Image (cartoon, rainbow, N blue to C red):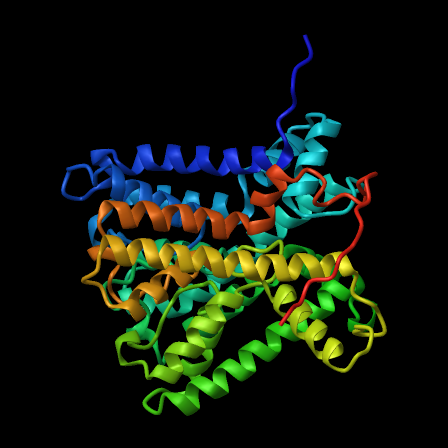
Length: 434
């Protein structure tokens, strides 16, 4: 009897769901709670999903309500969610000397959105080693800020490790307390290390390895160039706009907010004091998010850039081009698909939560939903007020945002990423657009 193989994208989705399920079970154990009582299924599910999808939204105060065991589980879930269980699994097997078969290579190729299986295992090793090295360096830098603050090396070390993992994986969880990083708003060391970790994590593993191997901007791939330039523009423009629209924050706070709102979720300012303009800017930055094949979410920087480039050249009646290269029509099509699907997902979730909890303010619901989709984790204070239905809705949205619209669509449309075309051609007929 012929055994039907599981589609790679379906396997990726199942792997995330399995990790979330195991995380939910572990966080629901009384040993995870300082009170000695279980957090309950829905809160445990929400926290496990938020950690695995590296979001940062929380219905439980990690700093005060979780034991060391619970914090370790959260840390592991963030690491697995950021790098993916498939990437970690292949790395472990390769270290042990196990043979990585063709099917597993194809699986990791799809997980990392690569065009070929050639050198895929070597790429996995680079990704894992780079991630561990970056997080180790981040931990060391954090020590200089946190050991003096806590007055204890071991306490400072534990918080430094947790914060380093959360920063690099753009998870947004912290164990500082109720005020998140607001009390560290003027700490240049912690702010700088956190921003650096967020940028490296959100830049994308392929971009980082490309920079290391090429060592010259001109030699980088078009993907890397677009990712780097778009990231820089978003950070600079976001910083300037936030500073101009929010008069009571410093330039450091404005820059940190600009960096963090693109899927990290840490904050050094009080979000309740946001002006309508600042609120709109943060919503936009969260929606765009990080770069592809990274630890962040959102529609991605390259998607945003390709859409703008396409609109610009379409308006001028010219063929799109950037760095003397033409962007493939398939890439443009996928970019617009991602944008539309993201808008629809956010709209539907806002409607569902508004129906389930009409007492909540609309702008706070919208902020929460965009934050969940982009796996940012910022909140305007309504997360703990969500009922069970709203928690499930946001849990699904966080998973959807972490996996990405194309991964979900790829399960149904197996030809989405292939160049094969249908043999049947239909007669074209015009449709009025616009």
